Length: 208
Image 1: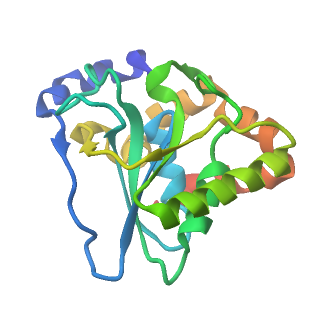
Image 2 (image 1 turned 180 degrees about the vertical axis):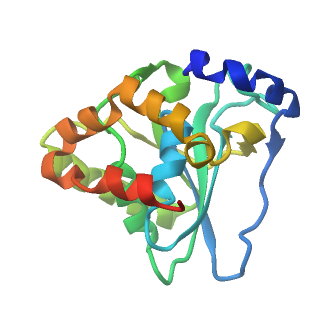
């Protein structure tokens, strides 16, 4: 993912990654983990959803311990979303995730292709699995084609390096260059049509 954009940040790689199984910041908050390709974009766009309190970029789904950006084979780039279920239900959160990716792509997301960029919803229990499967089926009907995004059992989540966190807000020029070069908005508008209208603008204005 985006190696040319990370040259200026290479020194920060020494900070490494850490585990992040931490509980939500408040008793009424819950967490959910999603993999949607480049975690810069998924972090940025999921943060724009009402009821989302925090989003952390990281890695999940693999078996190796302490994955890093340079060595996360077997893991997917993922985000851990902390949300308030009184403001947004788990099903609504999953639906918001699906509408911010191309769920028909089995090999990655737009310009980011390969195993670590495949999409998934990580479910923690039977209730989440049932809700995620229902949303996935609805999305398939909505698009009129198969959905490639997997519904997977929850796995350990590992926090990505510090320089990846909140990347779009902290590095707006670099992120804009990546997003434009990747043609992310053009692709998602092609997938979702008018249903994608406003998502990009909301995401880019969020938390500024």
